[in-house]
Image (tube, rainbow, N blue to C red; front, side, top):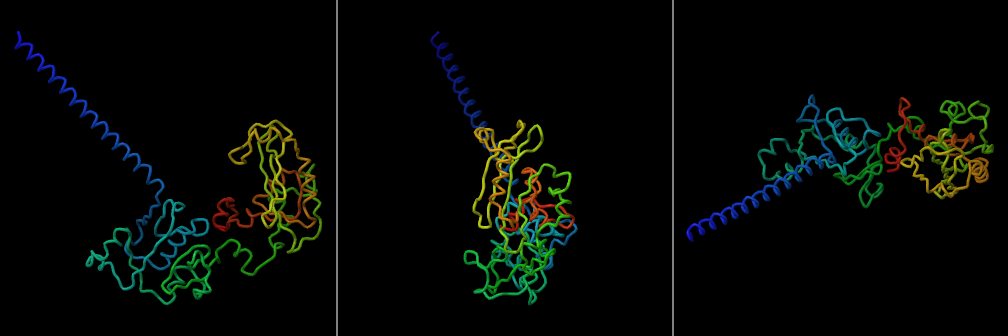
Length: 363
C-alpha cells in the first residue's frame, strides 16, 4: 500500500511539472508572437511616411544628364506646384522630404566603387543609387541649380550662415550661389520681371463679373451694400486683407466671422456674426466656429457692414483668396480687389489652394 501511494504521488508531481512546463512554453510563444506582431505592425506603418525614390523602367538606370539631375532636385525641393515631374524617375511622399543631398565625385566611375569597395563602403550604404554623368562643364552650377549668375559669398543671400536660393539652402564647391531662375513662375510669366505697383494686379470690372464678384447694377447684387470706396486707387493706396468664415443655414451659406488686417499684419477688425436664419451646420472643420462661440453673439450682418464702411479708407484695396466668396457672404460690393487665387492661377485657369501658395511662395 505504501509503495502504491508513493507511485501515485510521483505521477501527480510529474503531471504538475509537465503542466508548468507547457504553461511556460505557451507564455514564451505568446510573447514571441506578440513581439513579432508588434514588429510587423511597426514595419507596415513606418513606410507610409518615408519618401521613396524609384527609376522609371524605360529610363537608363546607370547614367543621367545634367537636365535630368536638375529635374530631380527641383521637384524634390519645390514639389509639383512649382516644378514639373521628373521624366526619368519618381519621388513618392515628396512632402515628407526633410532635405536633399547630391554628391558629385569628379573623375570617379562606377568601376571605382567595385574596385575600391572598402573606401566607398559608407557611401554605398547611405546612397542607394549611383549614376554616371558627363564631365562637368564650366557652367556646372548653372545647369544644376538654374542660376542666372554666380555671386561672391559675401553678396549671396544667407540663411543661418549658408548661401540660399529662393529660401532653399545649398553649398557649392566655390562657396558661391545666385538667385533662382524663376522664369516659369506664374507671376513672372504674366507680369514680367519689372517691379509693378498694386494697381497692376487689380481685377477689371469684366474680370469681377466673370469670377462671380458682386458688381453694382447686376441682378446678382440686388440688396447688396456698397463699401463707398470711390476714390481713385494709386500704387500707394492702402492694402487690406479680408477673410470671412461661413456656416450652413436654412438659406444657404451665411456669415459667422469677418477679419480685416492692414499691410503690416495688424488686426483692424475681428467680429463674430449671428446669422439671421437657423444654423444647420457650423462647418467647424473649416471655419473653427462652434455653437458655443456664437451663443452670446448679438452682432448681425448689418452691424459689420456699417463697421466695415467706417474703417475702409476711400481708396482701399482689398486682397484675399477667392475674395468673391467673402464679399458675397458680406453682401457688399467693393470695386478694388486683388484675388490671389486668380493672380497665381495655372495656365488652364486651375487655382491653387491657399495653403499650397503659402508654403510655396512664402515658405
